[in-house]
Length: 346
Ligand code: RBF
Image 1 (cartoon, rainbow, N blue to C red):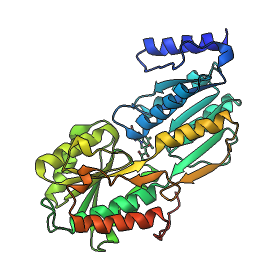
Image 2: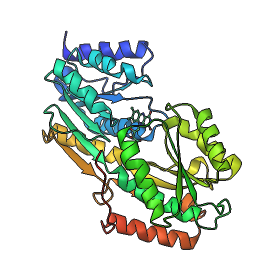
Image 3: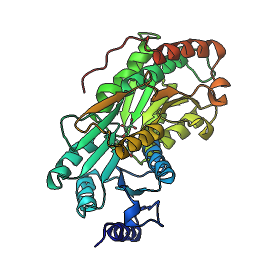
Image 4: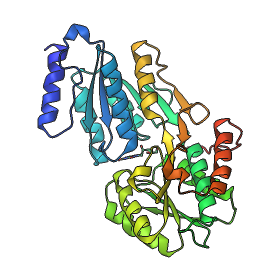
């Protein structure tokens, strides 16, 4: 079976089985294709910005390069099935590259790669070194947490309408994993304590990436304990927290993407992970044969891959000027690498 035929067969099978399988180059023949990429979504794309940007970056690259084909596969929320699904997807050898974005994916790739030694994997949002089949790109989420935490600290100690006297900030996680427990959560608290060392963090775990009602319940009980500003890493479940914050009167800061328009006046600060840009650059390097497999590259604010969206009315019209001046100055220092912090081991 020709490579292209197999690719289309697989794509249609996946489409029939209810998976989102997209072939971006329906008119192509085998000879035209220099690179076929399986974008392996460890969850569901919709509602999870890192995955949305990953898919968008790969599709953008395929549109700009006729010789590149991309198939997007959503593996769903059952993490116990991810390795088996990936194994059957790569078994036919259709894909030159598996591209994903998840801190837990490299281990799975390493295991699948042992069965298919020619397969190559690139994973963003992960750190994994020493495997010649795998390259990783690690967002410095301690850094993003530090500046979002700093803004949370300014809000909870400030006098915005929904801020109370308690110096208490909240964080809701879908699940605990090393990047979350060792970088994201501690970075968020450290950022807040740079504003006021007495600030306390109320940290809660949902248990999955989709239960918005549970997130709403957690958020509401956290508001009862005095939390007036939230952040979360919770994928689609975060909408429950946002709803509770609106109904009960609290603020939300979002990681990784601009969310202001979803709830202006409630979502008052948004970090940015430039995943779409990183993914198109990575695919360019893949075509050029420039991927340093076996290594991990760290990308943060100084390198231009993490930022904060300050030029938005959702920020400018809802955070008081004096608070913005302090935060913007801190952000300038972060971007310039002038803020000293040490990233804990993972
Ligand atoms: N982030 C999401 O936005 N949606 C998800 O469904 C999701 N699932 C994850 C599953 C696992 C096992 C792990 C370790 C992380 C997951 N993440 C998810 C988190 C995401 O990859 C990333 O760590 C955070 O978005 C912060 O960069």
